[in-house]
Image 1: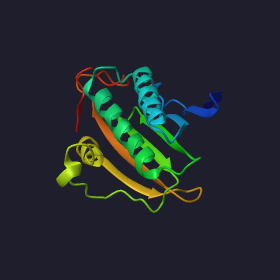
Image 2 (image 1 turned 135 degrees about the vertical axis):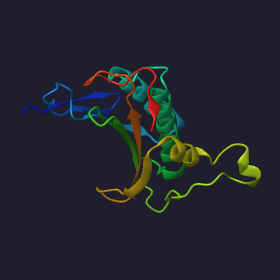
Image 3 (image 1 turned 30 degrees about the vertical axis):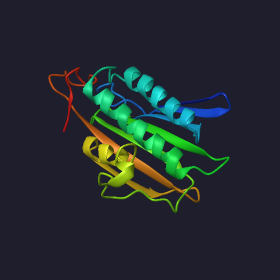
Length: 184
């Protein structure tokens, strides 16, 4: 079986796009997009925008509920990596993985702040913070089928991940998600 992988640089950041071999139906088993971003609001915005483009290229079309939900998850996890996981001079790593056969999209952000862990049971903020911040993981927990975190494999830090399940409605076997696809 052939394994396709490409790496190229853009503005000093390495991008990796990987497609594992197709199944007998011709549908890839797993497609992956990975990139490092600066731990700044600009880096979080760029992660969101590139994820939106990649999802559309994978057949999860702009303007559909799954596309918008996944992009919101990307935005929240990337913003959290910047706000709570930032270490000066260190980037955050972003990963987007799509398994078309199962209809699952996994979003991952990895930062180097292992001591700043997310709350596993997010709750809406109270008091002065209630107006501006603190709802990111609450949104993620409502949109994602599952989410969590694990220690960073390569050293200090953590990876926060969320899995989104796309339910296919009236889609032919082996095709991408339908325009009216909904969250399970």
